[in-house]
Length: 319
Ligand code: UT7
Image: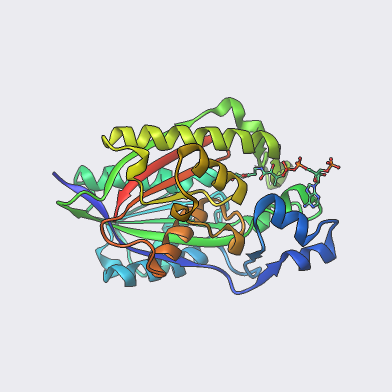
């Protein structure tokens, strides 16, 4: 059997840190409200000239270095982003050029905060079916560009960043199973409902969210999709060593672990340090826990995305 294994992980956060206290000087909010309701303490914000492909490049270099693989060996690049550099070409193509390689397939995936899990599932299929031997999967976002900085109900929740993994074909299982879902009838509860038409912005391209509806939806589907994914592997929830849900709100993470009956010690939480970075959040958390030695070879890790669309999904990965 041919499988896709994670050979390396990497991540990158822009240098500029914006704390809750700094935000509280600009809008009607407080560190106490943000920490209690979300667990977020600070977020990183990209410089005006930094784009998603720039953040993706740093995360990709780190992932390639940890895998000990040259960029020239990659034969597929998938970038998950809702904040691409341009309408086109894709951020994946721009990343490919910045990595100094050419020829391999490169495309973007748009599934908002589920984007990394969607990208991972696609790349896994390419590797398992022999269409790729080495894939780079990246989640990269500059969400700060699509926030209404006067809307305290959304702007305090998000940040910028990127995370990446290198997948390599292997005879040992790596990605054991993945499951993807969507429900377009729920598009309205989390959206940036605008676009460019004839050179002008139409609609509102800034994030709008019904926070409570998203919260309830997220907790339910993260529970369901984790169970569906372990069932696909003939495992149970108790076989999960580490749970890495999309890092949106610590209350969603805690509620998910509780519903699954997993102790808090098996939950990886990084949302306090970078807020919700959409498609980048899962690989950012994965890389943090790999680098600090919590996640080790042989561990089973459940990666979970949930976000606009509505979209959700999970992958069970053996490291
Ligand atoms: O990738 C998926 C993306 N999104 C999410 O995962 C978000 C999911 N939802 C949530 O995380 C939570 O619903 C929020 C953190 C967004 C909000 O928490 P909540 O406990 O649902 O609060 P709420 O919306 O019920 O608001 C409670 C109060 C309101 O005031 P009133 O009406 O009770 O007087 C808000 O106006 O908190 C107020 N509020 C704020 N106060 C201070 C809302 N935002 C803020 C703020 N600072 N930033």
